[in-house]
Image (cartoon, rainbow, N blue to C red; front, side, top):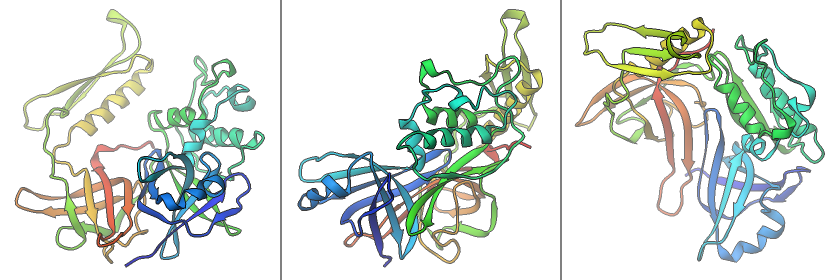
Length: 362
């Protein structure tokens, strides 16, 4: 049975506060384009730890499995509920959702015209961490992309009088057509936990031919394969900027021997015909999929050991039960682990999406 260890650290100085926290009922994980999360409980007899070792908003929490560092983030909430004391933490990326641009354009780094959104993400972190008492020692990968943030007609800007949330700046960059993706990792640096923002372009992760998840081998349980035509369409009509007859419009569709189903994509801010057509094609590709596995519970196995897969990876999934036979590529959009407790075994859950629902920038 794997051994888990939880430690707390001063977020500002990096000093170790608690070398072995007695947390129970823990669940933690990471996601795509989102901060990770961790939930756990502290027994009431350990509530005295809160004053110095688990102060919300100023404490880092790390989780290790058999000595390997799997997760790190900030404690945000610790409020007693009856006979339990829940602890809620979130990954490094959650910090920017508690910070604002109070100087404008990320301290003069903007406004941005045809800028690389990867650079805007780095600028948001740099601006946050250069402010007094704001250095969380998070590093951001030097990834570059050919996506564009802002234009000559409409530069991307963050005005100080609106005090925009820095986390929303990062989210806006991932929503750009063909833009980057991100997740986070934690590693040791000089004996202290260090956060790192992984940026991927044209995608995060890769297709993993060395990993597989198969019924009867390393899949414990799965949600049923869903076949739902409510979101299905092989024709997409994208409506862009303008009004009436002058409104931009692009249609992307194929004939595939099925009854024609259509979807209207509203994109009122899109002025470029080529970009509107690209968005229509992306939307059509994502909707032209039937049969989806959204969640798997797996076990630690040589076919895919814990730590071998990352958020963003494509993995082969083969499910065979009384309802369906599914064999296809799925993308890992998140994962969570529930450590063993008492008679309950370790539980590993993967959140998935069909790999062919995604198209990437080029």
